[in-house]
Length: 125
Image 1: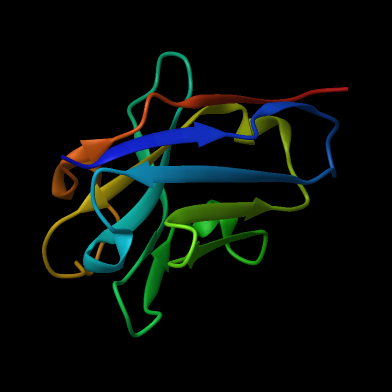
Image 2: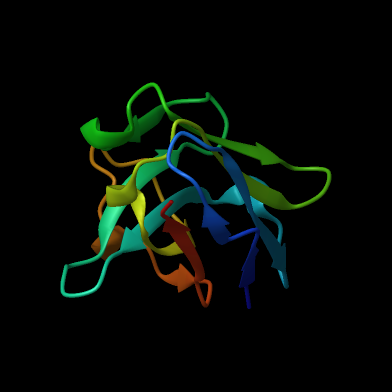
């Protein structure tokens, strides 16, 4: 069974950068659609960016366009989220997730069945 563990969260100043990682075990991520999601206090979990299995297709939230980039390293069985130009409204718990199935046109939590435990990202001066 696939297990996911996120790392790399923390406190960063506005305008700063962070790289989140998500290490997988129990199965190989090459067979999965992967995604990063976030949930701020009092808000629903939302899709940040999702990546297809093989052709590099992505979909992402408009709020992170041009600032966040999802990637995968199949040799390390790890997923990354590079976050640049961070804003206070990016503050949330960030989760990685994996989907056994086809890449969907929208990055929605309901499409994903395997989840990590989350890592806190706080953007504040």
